Length: 135
Image 1 (tube, rainbow, N blue to C red):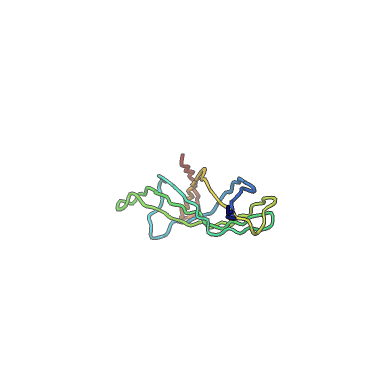
Image 2: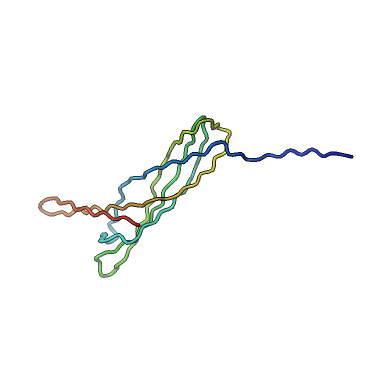
């Protein structure tokens, strides 16, 4: 009777880490677009571009892709859209990981909060601030 010897490799979870990051960045409406009167809807997506394993930490580099639909006072276009790419780079400390390890990154977007800042120019400078949050 002959025996056949085969080697196999499996992936075993070495560590699991959950973290939360906040991306806070100002974005301007292009001069070619009408002014924002009211934010109607926002949505986002995370695109992980690069991960690098190090000793006891992981570097993640990517971008948050933001899309917004807003209402205007412009009679030609009552609805307009925005798109922004917001880059980020984060380091996550995980005891025991090595540069030779494999990492799998998953994400969940908990909240997209949009704050609208309106600058009105004239003889003096007045600032109006409106806060819009999606449910």
